[in-house]
Amino acid sequence: MDIGAGTGLFPMNHRDRMRQSGQEWPLHLTLVDMNTLCLQKAADRIGCPSKTTCVQADVFEPFTVPVAQRTLTTSPKFDSISLIYLLHCLPPPCHRKATVFAHLKNHLTPEGTLFGATVLGSGAHHNLLGRLTIRFYNWKGIFGNKDDSPDVFVKALENEFEEVETHIVGVVLLFRARKPRLA
Ligand SMILES: C[S@@+](CC[C@H](N)C(=O)[O-])C[C@H]1O[C@@H](n2cnc3c(N)ncnc32)[C@H](O)[C@@H]1O
Image (tube, rainbow, N blue to C red; front, side, top):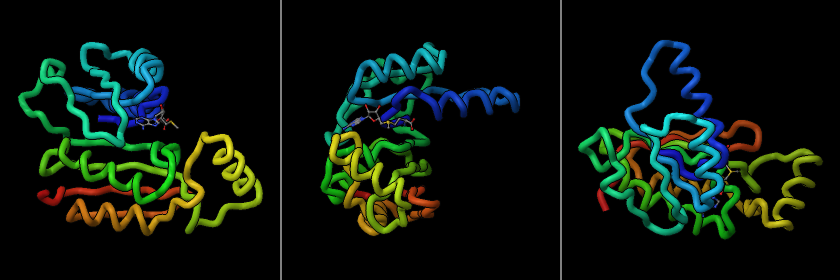
């Protein structure tokens, strides 16, 4: 399940890599976005309509994937959930964004992985161009990450998952979490 699918860039790249290595691409892919145009664009770009389900939802709210759309699997849970470059687009405060992990973990299988990347606002060293871009994007409302700190995201992930791995690469926090804690 890819949350904040945008134009479907990462699933499309993944599909191409899988195909090049002769592997079958996945059993099923669910795209989640609040914007229906993004869902349509991403699904078209990925080009596997029989394996793709689109769900319009606001990630701040718990959502369900309709049962009828969970084709090819008897499991209502997902092996893998990605949140790539979504969190920095959400409106502040940072601690509210971190609440999305709590309801997304309910969509994960016990062996599943939630992973993602987000551009940090604080706790990372932006160069001059980066600082100006962040300031401008936050002022325009394109990003809402001025005060996004790795500590808040890491703590929230650790509250919800038993295994958490994070890395800061440049100004981006990469995260991977496994073994959702029982509510
Ligand atoms: C910067 S794009 C990331 C796209 C894609 N993951 C990528 O990395 O190329 C952020 C996406 O998140 C979606 N989005 C923003 N706020 C959202 C929300 N509250 N709930 C669900 N999707 C949201 C936007 O519509 C947009 O498609």
